[in-house]
Structures are given as structure tokens and as C-alpha cells.
Amino acid sequence: MTGEVRAAALRMYQAFNSHDHAAALEIFTDDFYSHPLEAAGPQSVVEAWQRFHDAFPEARVEVEDIIVDGDSVATRLSVHGIPDQTPTMLEMYRVRDGRIAELWALTSMRRDA
Image 1 (cartoon, rainbow, N blue to C red):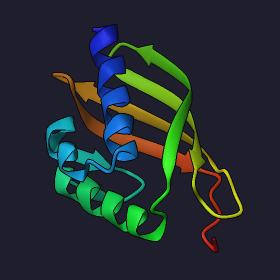
Image 2 (tube, rainbow, N blue to C red; image 1 turned 30 degrees about the vertical axis):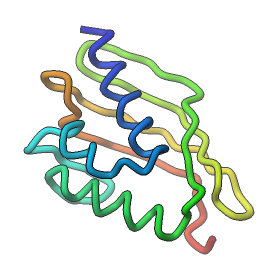
Image 3 (cartoon, rainbow, N blue to C red; image 1 turned 135 degrees about the horizontal axis):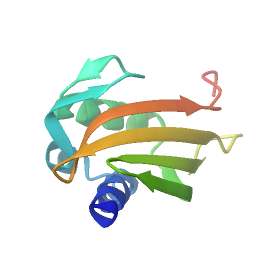
Image 4 (cartoon, one colour; image 1 turned 90 degrees about the vertical axis):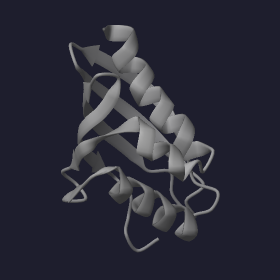
């Protein structure tokens, strides 16, 4: 299971970095819930990614650390392509049947950027 859980997280970052927003429909479960966005469903991810890439077209994440424990994954990321900053993000996912079912996140990104 560890490989499947890790693969789900890496697949999500690859889709984000390549602006493959539609891939979110396959990466996230139908009942996916994002605690930071307070939103449900994979379409909420598509819309969030679109807004983010509209604001920061060069944005991409780099996975610095990844830890898998059972059906959960924790990552530390650096975000590149944001003017005047390189924020760090900490994200934690719960994976079910190879798809991301739930997300928690913290970021150091300044919102005034």
C-alpha cells in the first residue's frame, strides 16, 4: 500500500505542475474533502488550481520530503514561480483506493503577493 499512497501524492503534484487541471477528476475521490478550502469534490480542486495558475502561471511545486504511514501521506513542498517569495507548504492526505480522499495543509505563502 505504501507505493500506491506515495504514487497518489506524486501524481497530484505532477498534474499541478503540468497544469493538467482535468486530472484532478481522476486523482481525487468523488467525496474528496479539502479542509483548507472547506470544499468538497474533485471539481473544487480543478477550480482552485485554475485560480492559482491564473494568478501565478509559472507556479510549480517541488517535493522536498514525503512520508507515508498507512493510508496517509505527509509532504513538505517548496513553491516556485511566486513573485518575491518561495513559500513552503506542509500537506497531509488520506488516500483511499489509490485516490486522494481528504487533505489538510499549511503554507507560509504571503497573501499580499
